[in-house]
Image: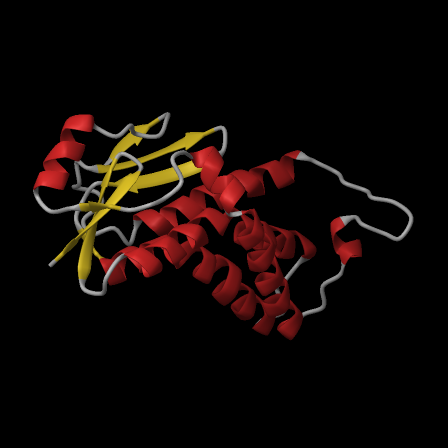
Length: 202
């Protein structure tokens, strides 16, 4: 595992080698900005899903987040900044820990950018495992966690906000999930070259 301060770039030479070896490049957004723009509708859907999950076991209202019929009150303090940084780290860790042998891997990269954290691996991973790695932070933090916290009465307004925020931040992950489901056959393996994704029949 290597720590970077920017997203790894694709290697043109590796791209040609992969094509010659039968790897098929996925049709996907060319950069992070495009991916974020394409995922905006999914951001809304993901937020609605999380709010729906929370509402099953706890009350949730706009007033908890500083919105009222007459005004909007948003306060930012060191506490919420700490929680936001922790959320980014936890989100990326939940991608990372499900990558096979990620600690020993020389082809797995983690880091932070202005747009948040990232985890990229160039290891060959089966489709089913790749899908799980992709969606794990959304499922664990925005679906399973609120249900567990709700059962024990631990869902505070701050945690509700972070859970919904994580679901919105997972929109690019959900976009990648849908692209893989649509384009990659079952029992295939996937591999990255930088942020570009390829698949191949096993």
